[in-house]
Length: 444
Image (cartoon, rainbow, N blue to C red; front, side, top):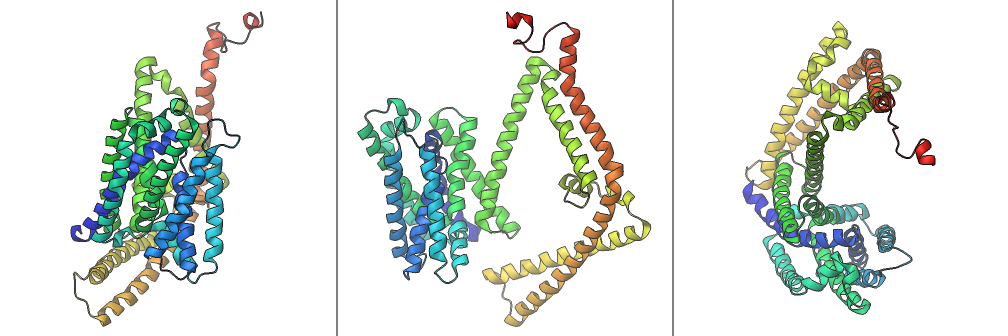
């Protein structure tokens, strides 16, 4: 695995180094979607070059994209004013929407337009070469040097716009920022795609802003998260045979969600230490309300997807069996065994297929064809067993709606109402008004 992923990992490190720093500026300026807008403008340039007869990865397509991006950078620099009638974020959104629509119109005139759009969105970081990584590093190094030498005015404009200086100087430095930012985005989109570039720009910087206060602290946290998520995403895409770019983006989302949950748990622990268990009353009421809503949806629509119940039955397999008859239980056991066998066989043959594709195992052409036919047959058997399981699940849901849905609805609604109304009742019993702005004293 290492011999195939070390070059994509180096590319991820290069992206992390420059994009985390630029992401801090983007968050401070409040122009969160400027990356998507400039990336879409670059994609429009690549699309125009593709329609003109240039390959997507050609140098001509790159210069088309760079020219379009610098035009967008000039527009964003000119539109940044302290008291503008139209917020800059609105202009960024308009540029993104118009560029995306124009790209669709252009791609509609080109052959294999859907594949072109997919390549721009997802990228091809798994097939990046050492030469491409080296060119990215050589390009980003002077850009990083420029930002280091001009760090004072650039940081002042991003973090203290009111004291940044004269308007003309601000616009000049803004153009330097957006132009260098556009060069980075244009070059990164060629390798990683729009979605992955946006994830590297925003997610580590957002997590770092929540965990650290100083600029260097945020850089350190963002770089660390970028490196760890890159390694984890690449490994996950290899192990489970998933699209690499999309896997890394989802991994960034999972990490950001984990950071948010950790911060929420820390805030709840501090509130509990300060005010006691009563500080968790709101969270308990929300949990009861969610439980009541889950019961209500099960009663009203038992055939819909109930993920909480699917998760419970996957964690405790015996949770569904009490709601099945004897014949249904036998069918359920046979289908579960069939799914397990088919899944294991599919994974085994797909592993051999991957080894043949990467050249680590020599497999004759006729054997590869037989493997493809075997995979197709096994996939049909797996689909049949899963259809039987879905049918049995639907039958169980019809019975669970009364034995699980109604009790959950009653307990959840009752708990939420009790936790919400109890503070008011306690305040009335103690003679205190629940609102400091109500009562005769407030009217006087």
